[in-house]
Image 1 (cartoon, one colour):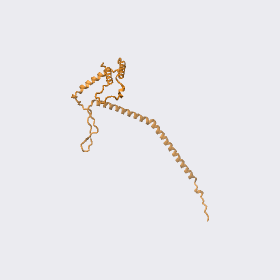
Image 2: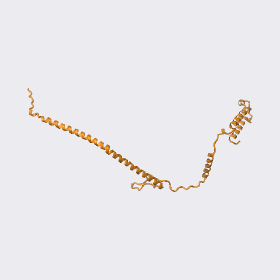
Image 3: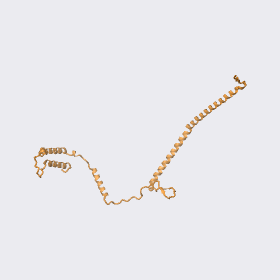
Image 4: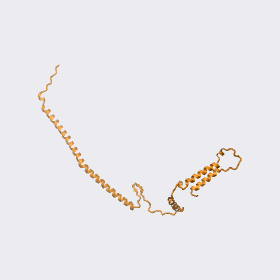
Length: 215
């Protein structure tokens, strides 16, 4: 079995077909490149226009708007201060929702103080007189000067003499051995006088009278 030889005639090969395809590819690449360059140029141009043209205009418009709002705020503030200085009564604000019930709903109640000031009523307990006297007493006490007892003349000398006198009386009239003495009569109803305690009490009374200024 023989295989037939495949032959291609020379008329089947056309070199013009290859050159035409290459020309079409070259035109497509050139078109894509030109389109890319054009879009890049448009983007750069739009960025420059936005940066140097639109941005300053927007900043100017924003600053003018802020100035306008600030002026409006200042006028509203002045109006508010003027109104609250003249108006003493603000009516209650209510909303009618038209729901068929005929009721009015108050969102907020803005009510100032009552115009009719309450008349001062006389107090039956006399608290005003007491308050006036306490005020006078407070003023007098504030004018008083405070001083220390140690700064009094001859205070240290008298204090030393009193302590020495107290020590001597303790040594003379008070016997420490009597605390542990068991020879006291159990049936005696009358209690013996404690001379040391009486002397201590008298010394404290003298000292208190001296420091309080009674002597």
